[in-house]
Length: 379
Image 1: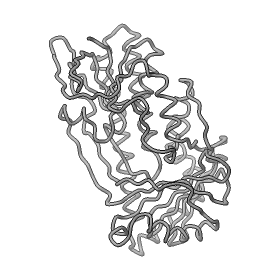
Image 2 (image 1 turned 90 degrees about the horizontal axis):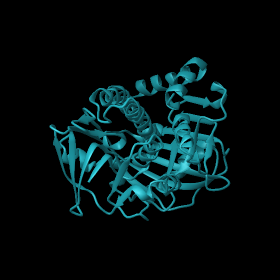
Image 3 (image 1 turned 180 degrees about the horizontal axis):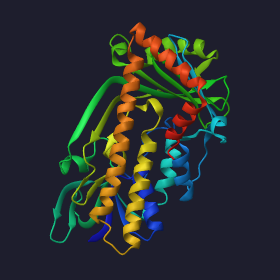
C-alpha cells in the first residue's frame, strides 16, 4: 500500500502535522505503538505554550482550557539578582499559556483517529532511490510504501535508530520532578528560582483556583541519601520562604531524568526527523514543545509549497529548506540552555556576583527584555 506521508509517533507533533496537512489536501497515516486510549500521565503534567504555538493550534481549531502567564519573575536565591518579564513590556494580554498535557494530546488525537494505526511500530526501513520511495515494515507484519517518512516518535526515536541517524547525547545528571500544588500567590504570575537546592519553577495551572504546577530540576547527588519525595517535602519550605507564600502539594510527584540530544542532520534520503526525535533540551525555559511546533510549522510550510506547485512532496530542495532553518536555531537554543544551566549550577562567588549583576542589568533594560520575550514567543 502506498501512502504519501507516513508519520511515526502519534503524540502532539505527529498529530498536529497530520491534521494540518490534511487541511491542505495531503494524505498521511500515523503509526502509533500505544493503544487508542493510552495517556502518559494521570492529569499532572502541564505544557507551557508560547504565542506562536497557541496561534498554530487555534488555526487548526484546537482550543482547550488554559491559564495565562502575564508576569514571569526569575530570582537568584543566593543573591540579589532578579528579573521581571511582563506582558505589558510588549503590549500583549499575556506572555504564554499553560495547558494540561493530556487535554491537548486528546484534542489533537481525536482529529486523527481514522488515519492512525495503533499498537504497531516500525521495525524496518529501506529506501529505493530508483522510484524515490521508502518501504516500511511494521511489527504487525504489514508493509507500506511512502514518499516521505516523518519521525515524531520522541527522544528515543525508533526511526532514527533504525535508519542510522547520528545522535549526540548529554546527561545533565539531574532529575526533574513535576506536581500540582495549591499556593496563595497571584494566579497570573510565574516564578523561577535558581537555588543550590535546584531550579524551581511555579506556574499557574488550569485546574482550579490557586492551583499551580511545579517543575523542579535538582542534581542527582541530592538523591544519594534520600528519596525524591522525601527531598521535595523537606526542602519545599526553602521556596515558600523565598516566594513569601504557602505551597501545598495536591498530586502525585512525577519524575524523569534530564538529558539533551541533537541529530546532526534532520534529513536522510526521504526520512525526516522533527521535534524530540531530532533534538531535546533542558526544561529550564519551557521551550521544548514550542521548538517542536516551530519545526512542524516550517516543515508543513515547505511540504505545502511543493504540493501546491505540483512538485513531489519529498522534493529535496524544500526538505533542505526545513533542515537548514531549524537545525541552526534548535542547536543555538540547546547550547544557550546548557550555558544557563552551567552558570546557575556553579557556586563560584565571582560567577554568582556576575549572574546577579546580569539579571539586574537586564531587568533595568526594557529593550533587552523585549528582545528576550520576542525570542521566547516564537515570532
